[in-house]
Length: 160
Image (cartoon, rainbow, N blue to C red; front, side, top):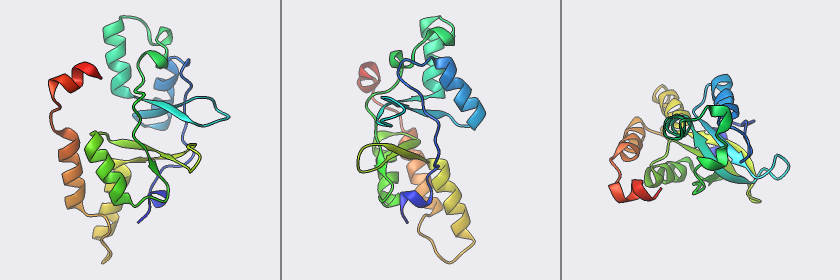
């Protein structure tokens, strides 16, 4: 199964100079916990990602309102991604290695075309349990959740 079959299309994104408040609004309105940050809306080139957790931690540690915290102050710039024509199993392996729940999906030119989340993969596994076809299994989802959830080394946390 290919990523393009499961990914969310029409993803809302932000710019690096947008405020955390803008990203939080997207998360609230779209019921998601992740927003890609693009260089410009025209280029669609992903330069970072921000999660609901990033926003919460920044609000606490910076002690400023969200409308005063720019995304370029808190976004992760070490972006892990996948391509629409990748196998879902490859994308799941990337999630495990990087300990992330979501991957931006990029086209051949590096433009954002969607997002693949662990929830997308889990919903497919649940659908497939009702059929004879089992490309995505509950066991694989469990292994991915376990890999994502394992404790990181303190040195890795301190440098990120």
